[in-house]
Image (cartoon, rainbow, N blue to C red):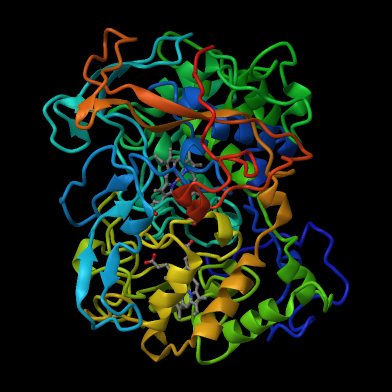
Length: 602
Ligand code: HEC
Ligand code: HEC
């Protein structure tokens, strides 16, 4: 993937931009950075506009979940991330200390690692959760089959597991890491905190070239042939084919692509959700008389993809469109996510030469960010604010054996044994990274881009910090768990005064894009019912969901409405995680305050 082709910047590059244009210590505006595109996309795709529409529908469609209620967006509805408070706790990847199911996070829970002197990482530990604020996915169920026309898959609750259940009644499972934002993720060479979403897409699972199988069917000269897929610059496609079949995030245990295909091809896209006629992508397809789209998934696939990937007549044994569903799903969602670029921030304007775009405090924060005492730009480089970008990780002199050069670092958020990060293996048992020095990738995580971090709390792979102030305090004390090796570079040398920390917070908040803040195009979207904790009749006594006789061990969901937004966005700005935690903005002065209830029925 070194030397991968990048498209020319498709967005108008600003005059006077480029490195150093605004005196930001060589940080360019994001508008000058080319959006990565797969070099051989035309082998598969015939219409990019249809592909983006298909991807947006897939991403937001709750029917994709095994339970007919869980979309990608369920964990990525809020500035591309998830700020829910209830039933969000899990155990770190390497541990099995199951937290109280269905717990609600509160102000005093944060940070997860509390010290008698927050400025000193060797002071007495006053409390330590060793838990993760992740994202609630699905209840653990066995997959039997799909029923065409039904949003809910056929299966059974998995009984007898202690984790994610209260008194034998199952709660939704929670991911073992915090959900990062999908916005700007297209700039990452590899995605996920541990980089396991390969840059090379294989059409079926996240692990790229580790999978030797020929995963798709091509219709060539009247015959169906199995072919191998290898598409580079496609980490987002590799990523997208993970959750849809994952038994924690969206699926019952054992569902495969042709089954998800059979189900979605039988349903009206987004049938349980409202799509606004002024949606920037789906508006023309919106069903003005009710929910969902007027088009079908089959029609969108036929419009977006070359006929060789779908036009074989279906037989009793083979249905090409169902078989190739992973290919469509991955490439379409990647195309949609590639439009989610927040390059219109005040920091970008400043870097393009508008000297008044940042306040004095924010400029002080920019200076602190690029100053040696903070070390920030050791790891959060360039317009993408991460070393994991194409710009940085694929630069000519990057050392392929050094995790730092790929944008992966250990900052001391957690103990090494809890989560190996990039030091782990992929789904085929192969190492995620081959370091020059044995063990050098252990405990390293992808440096996140910092844009819109104002809205994407809680922070870090463990979700253990509620506020940007807490993140700065973490850096100022040189991390929580510096011991164990692989720390840095620079973590131990960080020196931040109180004034530096305040200025850095102001600077990071200036990295918010108003189109994200108000959910304007391209960040507008269909409505969504988000599971927001489960109903307990009294503490520890869940109310069983009796609506479906097949699933008798499941606790009743409480759903919050995320209203649809159109191209013009919302009147109120998005709520931050800290505001939700403190109860600020429930009066309607913030969007996504989680106060409106919702019922995911047709
Ligand atoms: C149950 C919650 C949940 C659902 C549903 C879910 N995700 Fe995620 N997503 C996460 C978590 C948690 C992570 C981080 C996991 C990790 O790094 O190990 C993540 C990571 C990602 C990333 C990587 C971003 C980065 O910077 O590394 C992308 C992109 C993404 N998800 C897109 C999707 C898409 C597309 C879907 C649907 C196919 C989806 N997610 C469904 C929780 C979820
Ligand atoms: C040694 C590399 C390194 C340095 C130096 C560094 N960071 Fe980070 N940063 C990371 C990594 C890696 C993560 C994710 C860590 C994790 O979750 O385990 C991160 C996470 C963050 C986050 C949380 C983002 C999110 O979405 O969760 C913020 C904000 C942040 N850094 C800002 C800064 C600032 C400001 C500085 C300078 C004071 C700084 N970083 C210095 C590597 C670094």
